[in-house]
Length: 149
Image 1: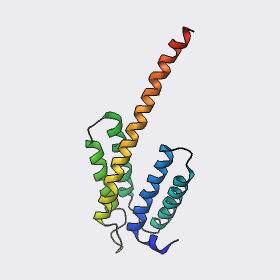
Image 2 (image 1 turned 120 degrees about the vertical axis):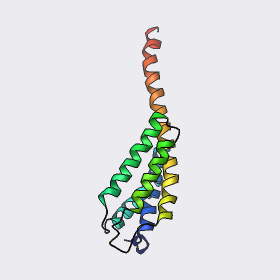
Image 3 (image 1 turned 90 degrees about the horizontal axis):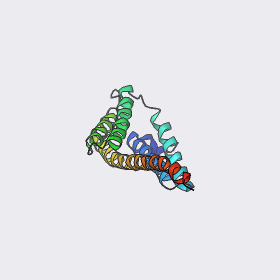
Image 4 (image 1 turned 180 degrees about the vertical axis):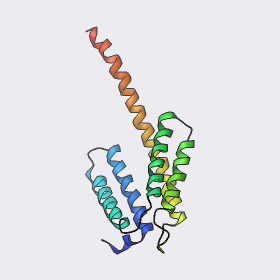
């Protein structure tokens, strides 16, 4: 494992950079490079973070953040749930590593990762939900169009 990833701040930043690269694969299907880079970054950072004592509550805060991102995109909550998700993600990052060890993720790194990631995630989820709704409307109209042929 690269020595630079031994720092939990760099590993945490690399984890979410890898996830954003994987998002690029969903936006532009068929482009192999973002998926490969994202997968390698995510796997290396997970392996680097695995060596630290991780708090279960911090993992639950990250899961709650993703649920809040989805709720914001699904129910059009004007960004309030997205901001709550970003705060949950930042708190989860700060409390990710057990404080009994001298190593932790700094607050500024947690904020720098959480805010852009929250914005991008809510934006992409809202696009996906709108596309699904448009597909469902098209599928319900299509049989009526084809029955007249």
